[in-house]
Length: 359
Image 1 (cartoon, rainbow, N blue to C red):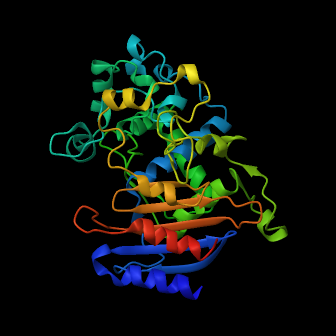
Image 2: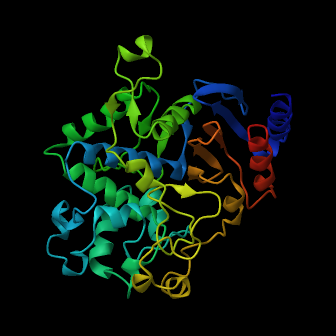
């Protein structure tokens, strides 16, 4: 671990990066942990868009409970959409994979829909209204198009699958209690709508604990199992196959996106879908949604093959490698307030160097 300590120390010593937390877990055990920027292991840190992956967990748990399925149509859950015929084919699966075709671009400037949703209007309801008004773009439902609005529509759908707000809140709390986390906080808007796209807080250790749930394929311990047998996990939180679905490339994402998780390594760059006749060429989707793959994320290809990860603004990173074939399982957590547009930072090299100490 000497090299790892040097790599991470150098990273934290660059105070312009505002690195706040770093954890590395190998086969479920913390092998290195460091904090900066006046933070420590008890500090709740904002995940920004890493929160989208938390929503994946809440959806997966709801499907395990038979509350709905991947093929459930969202207009059956959202009362405001029942008469919106142009949205009558949109499913939970499409929204999870960011291929809903909704006309809301992920751009940030004063007055943009996403900026207003997060910081101005104080509610996500306008996003739903806009989706009903604008509908879809031509063929857009077959295109990967990353959007925080889509995640918040999923939040609304999840909430509406319960009979009341109390049940929805209990569902969220149940996830946190199931994996023994205490620090998670999810912000809501003025209408009590969960803002699952952007405003989730937790300690670095609890972000890592959420990652372990995926490393363990959606299984966790019951209370009496941890003492009896640390390897035995019988509490199924996600349905079987959920993690495999989560890290399966969405078509036309150039192999970079699964279901509310980003993907590292070289995947099916072209489309991520075996049905050749059903594919839209990436170039067509680029024309429909010009901002859908900006900024470029070529650095992700250099992560270890099989990496899938939560990622957020200012370089929030919670990465998972499940191991196998003689390779250890690894969870990497890096949280901070790094302004990439202000400072040139070679994060490609940083992650390569960290993983080189394990693999």
